[in-house]
Length: 238
Image 1: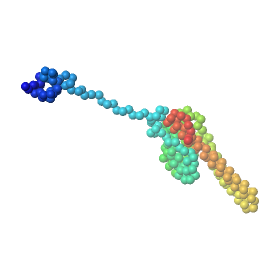
Image 2: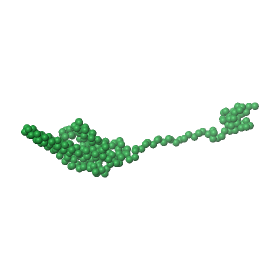
Image 3: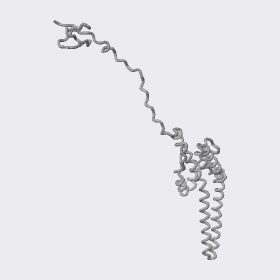
Image 4: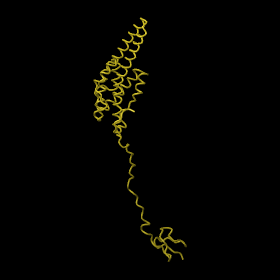
């Protein structure tokens, strides 16, 4: 005798333990009990949105803004090598770089931008450099004082004095030394010629030291400010 599901009325197959239509369990008497309510209930869908994965923060102690906008560090040894190798072209590049760095680090523009500073150097055949020599030191000092790096501060007047003394040493050593060498050579005086040559070397050496001391200070100040902004540490050029 055929049996039917007491829940949905579908015919039951012999040997089945569940109704093939509604899934109700077949009891021992051959009748199918209604399926559990939770078995037929639809599975609720989660309405929660998956939160986006958090972005990795910048390393501790580093200012993210400065990572993108920081004034660049400058290598002083490379600066010297390029200037002796390329002369004025390399110096104009460093005028541009130091000027823009000084404006950024000081947080204000106290004289021409890097591009105009280079242009004024060219137009005035270097005479503008006297004014620039003073103002670059002034701007970097402001940047240093804002960061509490007073140990790197050097007065603009001191820098300007070294510029003039360096030029004087070059001229004195070159002109006077050459004159003495000429007198010694014309009078067959070896000692006079040697002394004149020695005077030229001393003048050049003193001039180089005097003229390159302020740029060394500026590079050191620039790099100390960049290091302070990035890592909160006072360190000079590496």
